Image (cartoon, rainbow over all chains, first blue to last red; front, side):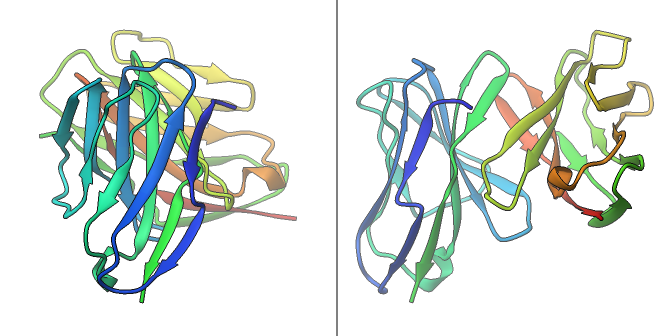
Amino acid sequence: EADIYQTPRYLVIGTGKKITLECSQTMGHDKMYWYQQDPGMELHLIHYSYGVNSTEKGDLSSESTVSRIRTEHFPLTLESARPSHTSQYLCASGHGVNSFFGQGTRLTVV
Amino acid sequence: AQTVTQSQPEMSVQEAETVTLSCTYDTSENNYYLFWYKQPPSRQMILVIRQEAYKQQNATENRFSVNFQKAAKSFSLKISDSQLGDTAMYFCAFFYGQNFVFGPGTRLSVLP
């Protein structure tokens, strides 16, 4: 299995709270991605990065933000969580055409 | 824009039998890659098989093989000798440039 890690695995948080979902990879990949996936549904790209200090918004509009200060780290932040943010968030990193996925963070906002 | 369609939301197969999952895509590009990913109940996505569009030969990976029909923009996955551990969501994905486009997924259940 690839070395890409997401924390926490599960998170239940109240409306209005600020949260950061962590994603780290030890493979030295330049490309990293965040996807949002509702249960049993397709993946939607919300953010991506092609390297340090490079971040772009994906196809699905998201109120989250990301940063890429170090190659191995690509955290996603929600400044004020809302129930509509309840979903699973998958992080991936890639080299060439190959992507490796983390185990995901299941976020519930109550 | 590229789109990926998986017309079978759910499928089931008996253990040891063969099942085929369908995928069609739409693109105007000529050079691209196609993937099947597996997402077991533990939820970590795992690459099953990859096909380069410029290759005519269908990719094979142990019990997994594809039927790639470029003109028809079809990319089906065949799982032979199905095992209980094959139970998962299967996503067809298209890669061009730098990013992926995923299909909606097919939930496969392997029955004992």
